Image (tube, rainbow, N blue to C red; front, side):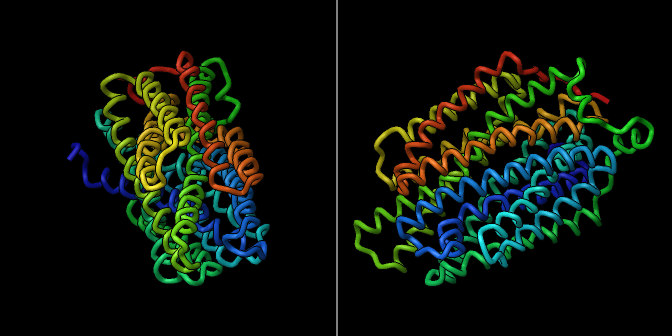
Length: 435
């Protein structure tokens, strides 16, 4: 299949697991926020005060996570060019696993934020090491397809987080929402098993070993010299647009789904336990639709990019992202239908991330590949960090899911900025990785 050797499949699988659990750990807070935040702030779960606090702290936590992701991505991307892709992948997986699991023992919101920040350093660093390793190990003619397959780990990780949350909060402990979130965070230890797989079966790519110790170590400032500046600008503009849009949608869609369920539960006069079960069910439906769309959208990036080129692929996805958000949050749609329409946000808003795993490594030579890819994909998160905070603050002022929906509607105009950046996008169709 795809003409890959057994070892190449092993490398792809190891990186796939690392990236999947990366997103698994990243998304867990978004599910537990409606229970976690009120508990740590000593508020009654489901009260107007709790809803307002959840909106606000979801924005704050996501912004902090994005900042840590940016720092970790740049720091470990540079480290991957220095000490190797495999060693860095192992280190980052261990960091985000322990960081997420430690959230289970947080006594207050500030310690939780610190634990999330520590986890985010590993989450950001894992991506740069993983995609660079895959890009350098795969045969050139199958590199794009392999990179797209790698990114299917993101919806898989999202789906696993959905299942874990529903199993614990929706089935095992629906009557104990004030403690169920701690058990969910403990599941963040699962990825540590992946680190053992990486350590035992994956070695450093030959192309990196060939250059290791023979050339000067990479420096961030090199990304801004006349030779590399166009590539850096191209990667940054595209990544910032996608990351800002995706991080806001990913953070607040579970909150919106929970709000929709609460309004329906109120209409049906459900008791507290039945309401909690309905909330977890609707969050699961919304997330599964988002995940399915993301999976399909991720795979389609490879097809469109190889047939039509990178510029057309990015243009198409940004246009569809804007249309999906504006329609879903701009029209009056029955709650039950709106849940399933999140599929199209997954297809476009999250599907586009499948392209960065092959596009960003194409922009830089071997000695700068992880540094450049990590910088473009993660430095943009510093800019993106303001988005979730602003959305969370605005939504918290009314403390209702309708305020979050209105705010998300305006987010639909952000992908249009990506369309405006297309003239600065470097077309890499048909090019091989530079040494």
